[in-house]
Figure 1 (cartoon, rainbow, N blue to C red):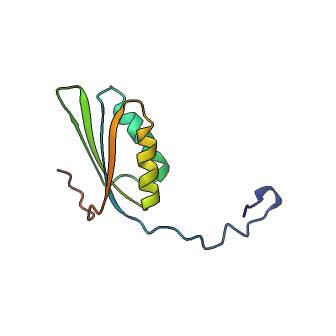
Figure 2: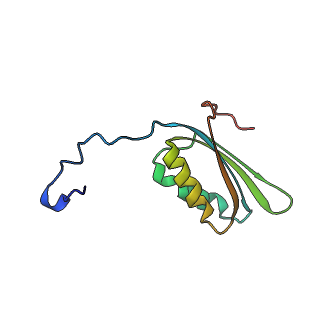
Length: 107
């Protein structure tokens, strides 16, 4: 089913579209410690239209950066975020875990 917005067809815009309930996800990634790695990662999170609950960034001696990001989103959105992060050339590994419990502290 499609909506023709040019013909002012808005019947699907008001329809109840089932969606996954939001929950907390912890996304961990390892990337090359490039100067713009924070910018590149945050650009991939922008489409969620919601700020992360928490972010941790740590640069190690081997020129890699480890990031932990806590998000409140649907499982589908968390999967999409991981897929978008995996497309970045500087990202080495990405993983997502459900159920951060809403904690704003990252260890």
